Length: 175
Image 1 (cartoon, rainbow, N blue to C red):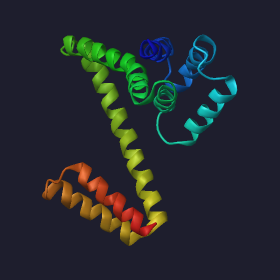
Image 2: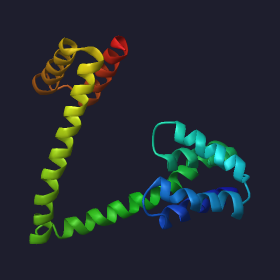
Image 3: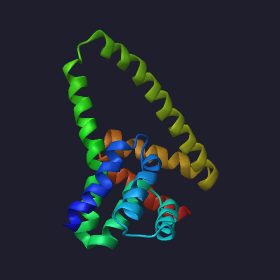
Image 4: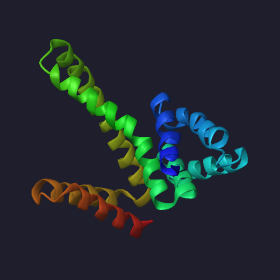
């Protein structure tokens, strides 16, 4: 029964909370503190503070921690599943709808507006990373990493994950 309660405590807030993790925090707090009384407000605020201090999405970190505290490994797994299921379900439904109307002039027009915006955002992100790298490790190392990455990706056809891991290892050496 505890696993059903864990699932409901995280599934319902993530259905109702629009706007990601920060929007669902008060709803999760209501379930965890007031509805099921698994934690006090003080304990929940400590979990929230700890979750904010760690990298990654707050909703999944909190779900894993609370689920683990209440139901062990399976509690954490169920809480995580309950947290991501609404988003995954909605994404699948939206993709099906988008696929059904992929030949629609409106969908094509939407794509023609969205794709350039994504390209500009990714370009700006690349420039920011390049400048940050330039400042952190210097011009020669930055250019060398860019050239080696290009060769590994385009000429050697190495999977991007390996290039990223290599870049992380190289960054660890320089920093």
